[in-house]
Image (cartoon, rainbow, N blue to C red; front, side, top):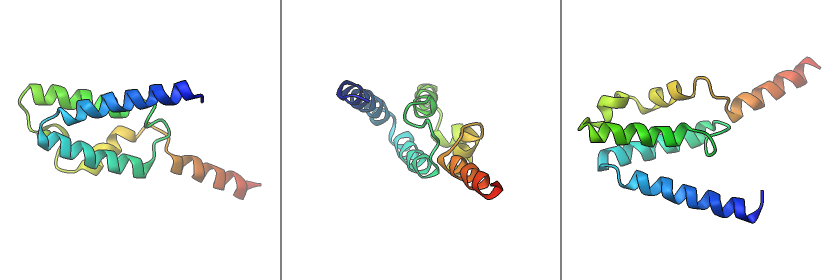
Length: 105
């Protein structure tokens, strides 16, 4: 990864966060909580993949339709996030596989 890639990545992240900040306050708060949870859980492609961008798209549509954020995701942020990640490999999955492989040898 070169300097240009880092610069471009930073520009994309800033644009992403500008979209988040433009959301209504309740959406913004819930997004930040989701982001914290997702960073802890650690999907492998979190920053490069479609998960965070998809959440912002989903929230923008919900806000435009006049819906409250909890109407969209339900009362449990972690459950919603887990449902998003059910098919995404996490760093914990990779680590567990490596442990299992080492135990088998």
